[in-house]
Length: 222
Image (cartoon, rainbow, N blue to C red; front, side, top):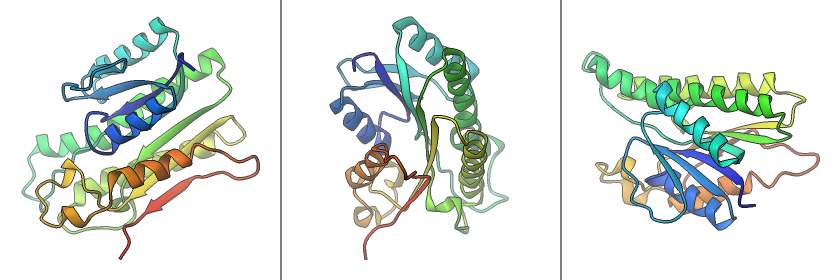
């Protein structure tokens, strides 16, 4: 399985980092994309840059082709949450949220689907890590909610486009997880374990002949 790979954005922390470890344990080469510098040693491929930057996406595709990797899955896990009331945002803060949680995933997905079509790949997964904010409006999180809802609709529409094909689109909508994303929230210690959520996501890849996972909502107990 050494030439089979999974692309994970936001792989340097939080849920993305946990998923990267799980896929490495299954023998996959992880191609990680993150704006942060990687600190993980080993064979993981790290591409530093924004997924909303076409140059970063070109680097991903070039590296995959150069190494002869077969991309089994793309996991769009990167995201930024600039929270606050509408009217107080700067244009840069709005762009950061939209770029990381909507524009970037769409651009990268487009590139990977194009690559799959060119090589006539016979299977593949696109997994969008969203949030319960994708379907539940929250005061003070208007831009974040809009970005996550937009990516959910993109995933839903892409699934319809791919109906009858060997490709699967899964939208994951977790509630709050105890990750650096919520480091400033005093309630973060009561949020879900990121390892629990990652295991649920991993299990969605174990497909069944007559059943298809499309959307997963993960809430904390209690």
